[in-house]
Length: 310
Length: 277
Image 1 (cartoon, each protein chain N blue to C red):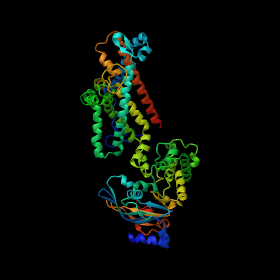
Image 2: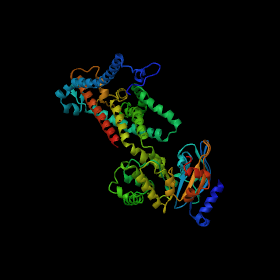
Image 3: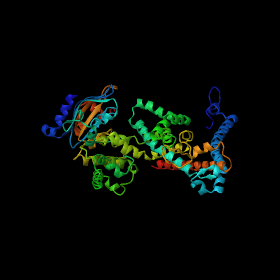
Image 4: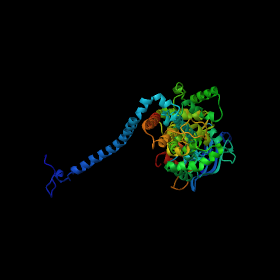
């Protein structure tokens, strides 16, 4: 009864006739393991890079806090390295003024662009405008600097009756630079809204403008704030373009066309020749920049978590 | 086809004069085009006021497209075109000086997927009145309360009006959408498969609601569910696209009771008894 069914010709049982499954070869196993580890190494290099920069900058910049003092460094009103005065408040204010002005100009421009692309433009127009906006993100910042220097500065010099080096020129240059960041992220936020709410709004008798201003923008609010903060990160960290148009005078903001300086541009200006405590103070400024951008990343992560919860 | 139509109408309403007085929407020789494609052709029918009219037919027979002609939602799709006349209370809604925005306030719409706005329950219902200029808080409070009551949702949400509309269940969301539409006091309510994305208990609630609402609002519902059409509607229209790529048309229109028990047209009978579609 228990005799397995045998093929009449070969006399083999079904189990014996079935093709055997191959065993995993040693080389395949090794290749898989090696690749897994390779990717792990890639990830570690990125993390180690950030950690090393932080340790290095912290180590080189720390003495400025211990020797000059946190208060004198952060709140000191004068940056005169030759006199051993290392107060970065004017530079910090400069960075803030430049960033906030750029956001104030760039955000409406970028959100308007995003609304146009996502809600108003026809397919054909979008096919032209969107790549153009994305291209803005790919232009090297030194080119923006040149544009600011050669095109904007003379115009602003005429308008303000000054040399044209100063916050106003920097605002305009930076505003254009942050448009792609804010516009593409805002467009994503608008596109990820539930598709039915546009129809619902139109069916309620709303016009396009009412639908955009009363339903779509409020619904995409969190995504837009997210986009603005990322744009802020870009504006605060931007160095080259700002350096070329801002005038680089480490003094408090005192007029649209009057030279000021920012943390980033001052570091680049001074680094080639700075020595001793001056050099340490530049690293101290780098620590501040590092903390600011970490804070911005933290806010973005927090906002994204809010968005997921919604 | 015209024969079928006049037959059923005259049989359904012996008193023609009284019938005429209660016609809300009159459609004459309507053709609908998506670019060059003729999607609907030769549609003529009268939608009665304060009644529920059901549009039935297989998928792709243009019943939703036809429904969206009544509030000109098709205007939002580039390349669409309507030929023929649609009269709402005697006025041509495709007339050159008609504002589609104003039309949509009088002809509300409920969609297949509940689509509350991502804002509070209160703001959802207050959306329409605010659009049309109601600003006073006490007026808005009244409208929100009345509308939610009419949509049979008030009891469930009266303590959570500031909570997000999207936190409600699917069936509640659909009733919220109904409340949102009722808040602007439309004459006509278009419902595009309002029950196909929600659970059976909620379907029951929405069907009850339709029965309550029809004394004040003319309701037109597109449904794939034959039983639902039989349960909720007074009149039924059967649409069919007989050949792929050819325009769909209105095969039969009449009293629901008659359409479901003794349809005049063989195709209607085949569809209702489940022989195709």
